[in-house]
Image (tube, rainbow, N blue to C red; front, side, top):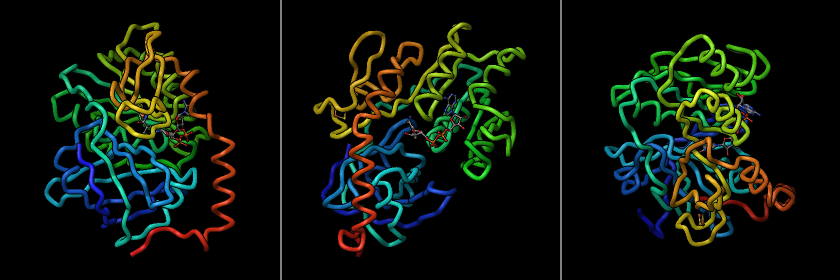
Length: 289
Ligand code: NAD
Ligand code: FES
């Protein structure tokens, strides 16, 4: 794990969809160590809070890591305002345990919303390890669907869903999974990454069939090192810290209702902070070079 006080330059930036952005950041040490399933903790500027983002891609040759994020609160809005050449103050990582990539023969990778970008390195790693990879990706609407071509490149079959039916199957990714299982698809393992409600729904679909299911959890994180307790989750009736014990856990054992409740802990404060930041943006600014 690398921690450095130096700044991290954005070398590429793209708008992938409304409120979903991609930044490629120069972080050579992290790019050399990153593995599928790992994340970083960022602080955009000196006034910024710390927040986790899954590493969507990395390239040790050019020393970059790729991060994809949804603009939801002040920190992700600040990050979204940065341009190529701007810098991020602090990036800590790679953090968390890498995904265990075994040869399971048939793996189903399920990605929802911005979580599809986090599913991409997982699908790629399972495919590269010789597994048959069936991927299901979904978004609320066609214009919010990201990483379709990236996922297709490492999937034997790719299924798409949208909540409103503007592309692919009309419904949730978990509905597509249910249909595939009912059609007779046999999965040795299902890997889910996306909103907690989606991962809960995926676990509910696979539980009756006894299909091993892994979820990549996304609780609030602060230090990312197992000391603050912010990322506490209940798994199999025991308290675990997603940052050091996870972020991946057996989805059938996770208490998703508690996770969802804890994710909402600072909902009101976050909304107020965003309102304040929007009203005072010109004064507070971001960090630009
Ligand atoms: P979203 O709310 O737009 O949902 C995306 C898709 O997930 C939907 O199209 C649907 O197919 C599925 N889904 C949503 N709610 C569902 C439900 N109740 N039942 C079944 N399926 C459901 O997603 P978004 O706004 O892009 O948010 C993405 C989420 O992914 C964020 O909460 C973010 O924290 C999370 N995320 C998680 C990780 C991780 O490592 N776990 C990484 C990146 C992002
Ligand atoms: Fe602090 Fe996990 S983020 S213990």
